[in-house]
Length: 289
Image (cartoon, rainbow, N blue to C red; front, side):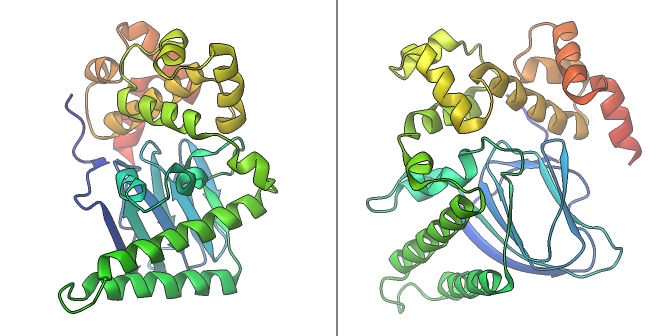
């Protein structure tokens, strides 16, 4: 399947951390990339566009996006400073950590509420994350032949960052430890399967059989974890991918097939129902911006 190169960003490393300070917006359009992203915003006047919604950010905030989220961060004031740390990583990198797994990704996947992407921080919390990211950057740029256990040290520090984020995420959304951690793994696995196969014909019966789970329990558990049904989640994934491709200039007809619709009319109706305009109208309006 051929995707838009302009807006489907492919980052080569399994993991990377960058500190960026710029005076103009780096990304002109929303984009999707195959890594999870932690965006630590340290400037006033920032806003985030994520999956068809706009969030005005506080001065200090974390923006948490997974590899299916269409997103863009912008400074609202022209020529104003945009100071941020950005960490990209693949889920496989986290799964390689000793005695750790998908629970570290819960803050990117457990989303039964609308404001799940933005995590406000106090100045002290932001400073703590700055220290951790600076240490990671120093380790990453160090010589692995002279820095004993560098790679393992990076894993420990990165895992600690994710643990801190999950702790703050749980506190911010007033989640009990039991509700946040109780056996969501099978749903996370199903979500990741959908992320990797969204264009295929995925039915509820297929998911229940593939993941050895009762389909009625699957629907109940999926709604608790994501705030929506499995079928609606698949539709949302397809339509966000469609948006990214349309922004990149792919024709409406090609987008229809690439995101798993066999019928152009069905695709257009689903798109208009979600975004209040047809795919072609959206594409034309995006090109004018």
